[in-house]
Length: 106
Image 1: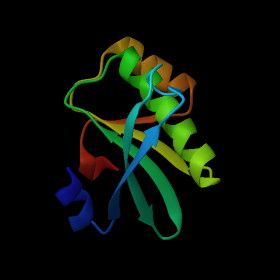
Image 2: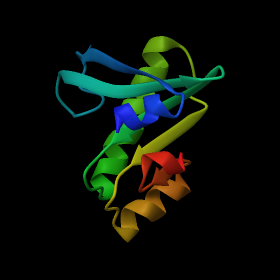
Image 3: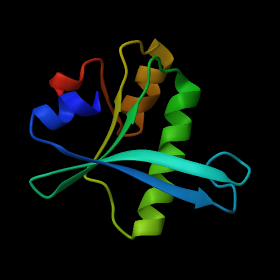
Image 4: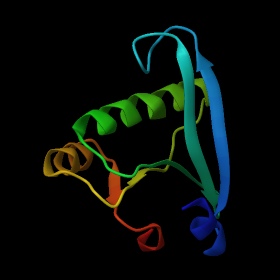
């Protein structure tokens, strides 16, 4: 997926930080996100093989963690996954997260 995004003109970086307080996973753990920048637009992206509502909730916490650490709000929050269950899709839409089943739809 990262290669596809790069091919269509996106700058893709991996953000990794350690969450000492357990805000994301309820215990101290590393947090990883794909950070995409295109034309000064900051996008935080989760690439998943399948997505359920728990995945959407964890992604929301990752986004909040990133935004608090970096002091910058994402312009777009995106999950790219070929298989998304209906409950996850509804939760994402209700919380401002975009869902795509193909990277080139982005």
